Amino acid sequence: MRLYDYLPSANGYKVRLLLSWLDRAYELVPVDIFAGESHTEDFLRHKNPDGRIPVLEPEPGRFLAESNAILLYLAEGTPLLPQDAFERAQVHQWLFFEQNSLEPNVGTVRFWHLTGRAPLHPETFRLRMARGHEALAVLERHLKGRTFLVGGGPTVADIALYAYTHVAPEGGFDLGRYPAVAAWLARVKALPGHIGALPPYTANAHVVVAPAA
Image 1 (cartoon, rainbow, N blue to C red):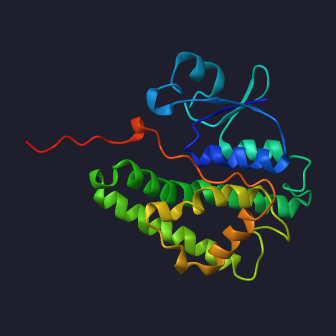
Image 2: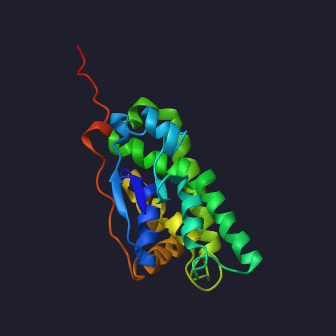
């Protein structure tokens, strides 16, 4: 099994965290997305026509893209994906929420902040920050009185939401405003198989602003 990934990506982090939780062996294939390695003819034709990472190759010649689709595939038949139809649908609900509300806002704010893009898009950055707080507030309301997102134990929904939420402070989000979220993050982090922090963005991810003449 191979995982094509750019290590600073929180989307890729989701898959690596799940593989660690499941104690599954895999070969990591680094992909420098800022050097165009995910937009080569071979990558677009055979691995992911959308030119994004992560991509899982569970067996030679079969490729699966989209981080949350990979989570569902790998978790099949494990306690991390409930057998009960309603609870399984709730897992899907939170995976859709993550990609629709949290990742595009919290993830983008963090990326722009860390790589020097924020000053280039001040109004969009402000709106993304506001919507990121809205997404965190949704999590806060749901997690009050709950240990994990769905049912009584961890699922891939927790992995998906953990990935970008735990690094939200790197984008300027104050998680002190969300005590239920902070407590949930600590519970997820304490589970066996935790893999630790994301590496920093590579140098070629940063915007270089020319000095004023």
